[in-house]
Length: 169
Image (cartoon, rainbow, N blue to C red; front, side, top):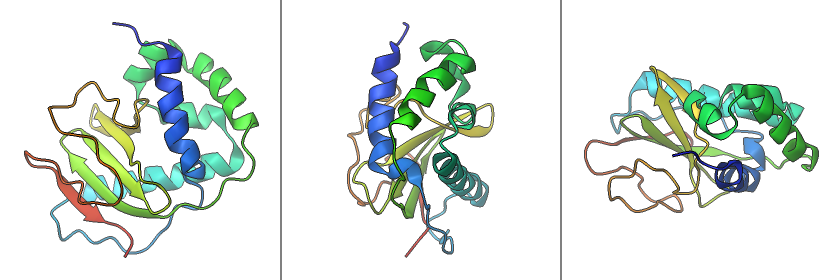
């Protein structure tokens, strides 16, 4: 079941471009009172900051280095091909506006980061114990278990044990 590059690229690009590729990810203190793992919150917040740096530098190679390995394999076959495709995308982007990280929602091996400037959360997945940017954005995930897509800054805690941490405000 091979996915076409456009089936992955279009939703991922739309989600990330709507956030200015997460430029200027907000800091702030982490509010872990909802039970989200401190380690997951720390790693996901660091990934958001890393995407900020990557977007400012328009660094396609580094961007592809944080995409989930399974999705690199199924979509691009190699990181080099991913880098080529994202170099084209980065070349069309001017200076991205800042985005403020507001929520982190974790449900097993899937996390959604919500940003003040977008109604669509950015999805991350955990593979081999490490968080990666998912190539499937905007509710196009294959591993949904009947839960609807999330929009806005509503509570994104999912049924079945999902956790949420408010990062800013």
